[in-house]
Length: 200
Image (cartoon, rainbow, N blue to C red; front, top):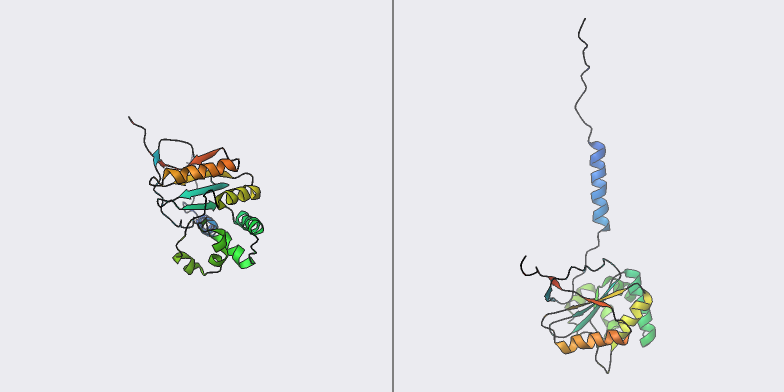
């Protein structure tokens, strides 16, 4: 009985379709990635062994620098525009569409509301040269409380997190916490750097 010859098949695989998909995915991720804007100040957070992670979105961050200046940051372009409109109504300041768009692109606010309009009129390069004076949060002029209140009206899902420098004074941290409690924000997070527990 003659042996059955198995037909030989080509081992060449056409990779064209896979290459196209890879380049499409690469292009998609390059175009949709959002880079975190530079913070106006470096904050050296204290260490902690907490394992609780903050969510990726809907966060109000209050930054306290080593020189006790206070900054405010929220995510979401349209939420930032809505927040600016609310603050403009409260303080009777009208912002142009160009100023609203500029505000939507900046991540962190570190100026009194009276200086914000002039700041937004600057070019992006000129804004980088401005030395922020911080948001007032003392008992006589507590603009931080208004930022927090109006932000939570713009998006009720916001969670509040405090990112304080380890060198910041206790008085300012206490004032920020008192401001949050005054605005009925009794649940908030402290952002810390990770520390390994003793014995690991």
